[in-house]
Length: 399
Image (cartoon, rainbow, N blue to C red):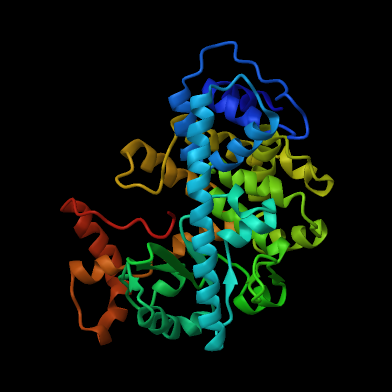
C-alpha cells in the first residue's frame, strides 16, 4: 500500500476499522477472524456508522453467520431490527418498481433500472442485503413528458422543478424526482447517467447492452455489467465515496462476469480510466477486492493515488452530502474535489459551460424569452454585478 494512503487509512476511527474488518470477512469462516477489540469500541458510533454508510444489512448478515461473541447482544439486536425494516422496505420497492415498469411497458417506454432492488439481487443475490430509498429509472429523454403524465395520473407529484434557461436542463441536470405520499415512494426519472457537461453512452447503446433482471417474472432490465461498472464508479466518485455501500457494490460487481477489455475500451472512450483506478484502489485497500490484472497499471498512477487519498476525507469526517446545509469547509473541499476528478476533456467542457447562461442570470436581469440569447454576451457583466453586490452565484453542475 502506498505510504500516504496507508497513513490516511490508519487515521480512521476504531469503529470504522471494525466495520471494514467485518465487511472483509469470509462468512464461511467461523468465528469472525482477525477481529481484535484491543481498545474500547463506542457501540453507538459503530451503529451510527453502519447506518450512515448504509451497510447495516450486510454487517448484520455477516455477524449472524459468524456468530461472533465479541459484539454485544444489544448491538446485534439493533442491527437485526434495522435489517428487518430494510427487508420490508425493499419488498415494497420491488412491488412498486414492477408496477411502474409494467405501466411504462404498456405505453412503449423503454426503461432501465439503475439501482434499487434489482441491483441488490444482481450483485448480492438477496435484495435484503442492500439498502435503497427510492426507485431510479433511466428512460429516453424524448419520453419525459409522457412519463410525467403517467406518474401524475397514478398519484405521484413532481418534487422538484428545475429552473432552466435555453434548455440547459437537458445537459446540466440528469434526473427529476416524484413522490407518492400515500405509498411513501420516491421515484427518480433519469435521462442521463450523470449530470453534465460530460460525455456518456446514449440510451440506445445502453439499451442494446442491457441485461434482464432475475428478480421478477415480468421482464425488467438493468444496465449491462460493463455499463453498470461505468455508472457505479462515476456515481460513487462524484459523491466522494462518502458511503461504503458504493464501494461494496464495486466489490460485488467485480465478482460478476465482466469483459474487462471491453470495459477498458468504454472507460477510455468516456475518459474515466483515472476514476476506475481510484475506485479499484480504494476497494482493494479497504475491502480486499482482488486486483484485476488489466487494471493493475492504473492503480499506482499518481492521479489515482491522489484521488483515492482525497476521498478518505469523507470517511474520516463522516460526511453526508445529501443533507443540507453542507458545512462550508466540506462544500469548499467537495467543489475542488469534483473539479479534480474531471478528465482534461471534462474540465474543458465544464469551463465552457460556465459561459452558458444560468437561470440566475434571468433573475439578475430579466429579458423576454425570445431575447435570452443575449445572456451569452451579458453573462460576464452579470457575474461581476452579482459579485460586487454579494449575490450568490450558482456553481454549475459539479455537485
